[in-house]
Image (cartoon, rainbow, N blue to C red; front, side, top):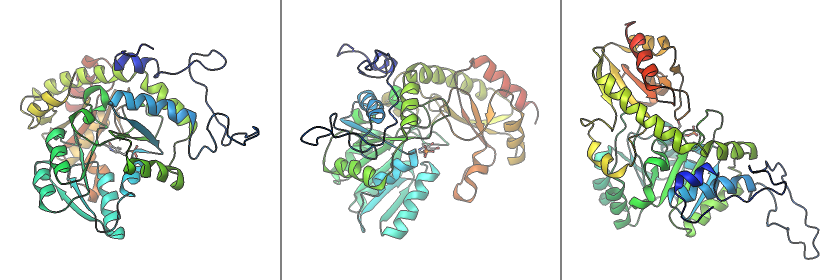
Length: 378
Ligand SMILES: Cc1ncc(COP(=O)(O)O)c(C=O)c1O
């Protein structure tokens, strides 16, 4: 693999992977949990000791992800939310976290529970209030998401990270919806990038996984790495293997999904039964100008529509689609339609007429026709 290969090339090859001992061109799946130490000095021959701490299938996916994000190192975790926990668990009682309001509700819940039980000071503010909130009191961690579900709010990573650094805080970005194809937050000043690797990185709706990528291999990062092993917050080998396999088509999938999402969003703005379309690629989206600066090659595969009707009508549309699958999650090859208010229940404040669309890799004309026929039923 030439050193200057572009990210898409690197991803297509699964990273800088050496051929397996067999000569096979995909990495073998390593199922061993422990490793022989038959050498006289008792040293493990390849550095592997016990697979709660190190695993060859993790390392392949981690190295590739670190390169794609332009980071120093990456770590895989049991799920996206487990990677949130890995950061949260580095905090000490009394430390303050500033978080954006419209982050993934599961993440917000994790912060709230942790704040209550561990004495963390949690300040949750709208994305537009992050910088002011950071400056208002000593802060340890700033957490935000861009584009953020379900309005696809765009946060200026450089501006918020600069404010975090001025306050001596760590800037962490959940970049699940963008993926490294569209945004590389470390280049904009973020310290740590988080992914629900369940989504675009894997891309096939068959693996639950999480990942963190760091700008620097510093003391805090080493603590996160140690905690992963000591708390056992780890990914299974087969999941890591599948994740690497999925990442090989990341660029194709995300580029296609973004192109189609732009077309679907534009079509929905003209639809008589749709009152509002939320997509950062539309000029009327409040984050459009920042997104144009911060994202490259598209605005992502996620959008939301508000229909002219109530919650029952929205549910009717979601279940009347033939191609879009009415299911939660995002970032897979198949398009999904989701009634977020049902999913988030009392934890969220999503309007009942909102439907969230995760655009897959199907033909965009087919997707638009499917939405047309479903919307015709209300
Ligand atoms: C933006 C975002 N962050 C984090 C998560 C949590 O990830 P996981 O479901 O892999 O634990 C999700 C899952 O829906 C998500 O959409």
